[in-house]
Length: 100
Image 1 (cartoon, one colour):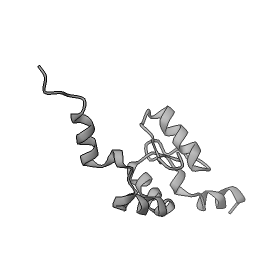
Image 2 (cartoon, helix red, strand yellow):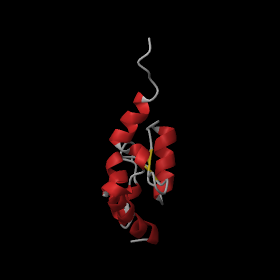
Image 3 (cartoon, helix red, strand yellow):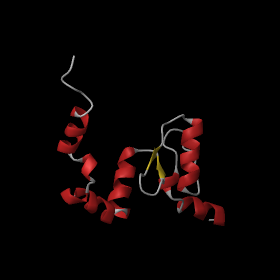
């Protein structure tokens, strides 16, 4: 078996396009290919802006790479006051008056 045949055997299938079987050396090249060749919408991580082809991959990335940020978001006291429901209702009501 030649060196090239061995490389094909060990090629990482994570970076293969499932629509046209094109093969890429890294994830970023695959994302660019899918965006331009197949016109698919790409989703980005809100924390580090890494791009993904599938939402499930972005969610997995967020859970694994940004655990500390996700745990902070789940804490009730970590949200700014303006995002709490009663504060939003009060701010909305203040824009209206009873005068007709």
